[in-house]
Every structure is written in C-alpha cells, then in structure tokens.
Image (cartoon, rainbow, N blue to C red; front, side):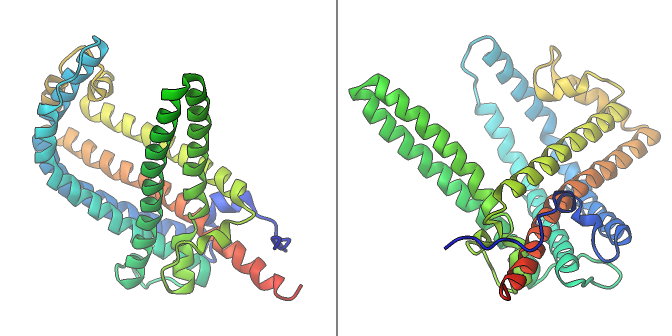
Length: 324
C-alpha cells in the first residue's frame, strides 16, 4: 500500500520553530520558556550543593585516569567508581527532576499546538497525561537501547565467528553490519520520535503507532532534529562556557573540567570555590545557572516542537486524504 500524497507540504522552518508558531505566537513561547527555565534552574540549584560536595574528587580521579590514558597506561577506575557511587543519589534526583520537568514542558507544548489549550496562570503540570508523555519518551529510548545491545551482540558473534574462518570475510561482514546497525540506530529514534505528541493527541500511550506519522517524512524529521539538536548543543556549550569563565575568572577552567589540563582540577575547583564566597561572584553564578537553564529549555522545547508539528501535519493530511 503506497503512502498517500500529502495535501500540505512539510514545512521545515515551521517544524524547527513550532514553539513560536502557536495561536498565541511569541507570547505563549515566552510564558512556557520562562516557567520551563525556572523549573530547570530550581532542580539544578537544589541538587548542586550535594553534587559539589564530591565533584572535586571526581574531577581529580578523572584527571589521573586521563593522564594514564594519554601515557598509554591502563586507567584505574576504582577511585572514580567509589566517588561516583557517592554522587549517584544526587545525580538520580537531578535526572528524575529533569525528566519530570521535561515531560511537563513537552506536554504543555503539545496541548497548545494540537488543541490550542493551555493551563491557567502557569502552563506546567504533572499528572496522568504528563506521565504518559514521560513513558513514551522512555519507551522510545528503551527500544533504541535494546536494539543497540542486541545489534552489537549479534554483530560481534556473527562477524567474530566468520572472522575465525576467514578474517577477510569477517572484516567485510563486520563493516557491513556496523553500517547497518548505525543506520538502524538513527532510524529508530527518528521514526518513533512523534510518540509523545501522538500520545497527547490520542489520549493514550502510543509508541509503534508513531511510525504512521513519520512515514514518508523521515528525512524531513531527520533534518529538523539535526538542526535543533546541533544548534541546541552549540547554544548550551557557549552559554556554559561563558558562565564558567564568568564565575571562575579563568579561561583554562573548562580544560581542567575535561581532565586534559596540566594542573590538578581539584586545585582549580578549590580556587573557584574561594571566589564563590564573594557575594557578587555568587550572584553571577546564580545568574549563570538560570541562563544555562534557559538555554536548555529552548533546546528541549525546540526538540518537542518538531514532534508537535509532525503530528499536527500528519493529522491535517490524514483527515484530508479521507476525502481524496
């Protein structure tokens, strides 16, 4: 069965700017962005004191490991894992908060785009509908993870088995299998990406049904997601870099955080902590966190907007095609 010819052409520019294309336009975008930024910043500020407690030790352990790798030695992950275990509760709290906020933010956007509805006063809520959106998000990435694990397992066993018989044949099959797996890992999240928006539209959890939405517009969706993801990462990195430099006063601090600096990052972190005792620097740090949260909110809203537009576009063409 062939895919019906769409009545309305997929609008790439609308897809990547759907946040600003609702009935209220920029007014709604500003409201949702404000509350999303405030929620993300609140979660970061709540978890930050607990993370900072062990973070210098984590940076130091990572620095030692990076030095070992650069020197061609095997890194000792014992210290890293011990410290990470102490950080895990704080990280889990932050991750749960970010996931819940993200589901609330995405649901608010989907409701506005698909139904023109908005919660009074503050657009963010968390209830059954938001839980459904969260389950849709997690389900897509769980499917991706299972495909990745199974794909790697099959590839290693099959190519390895052939390689034992014929190294050349094993290498060729391994290369073909790697490319095929890579294509599958790109195809899956894009084809299922409208799942959350479709779940809001239909009022029940929709995962595999999202393929109906993405059918025929895969390349459009891939291009749209590439633009918003790459653009979002660049924005977040630039904002984070400016914020870190503004707080620490040291352009080399980012290199220290990466574990590739010459100086022990724990020393650089201690110096930054000393500066943070200054009320002005503390204020700058809080502003930096809110700015970072704002950049992250724009990033997540832009990604969600692509799914919103895809379902809205599909709905319009689906209804229209019923009368062709």
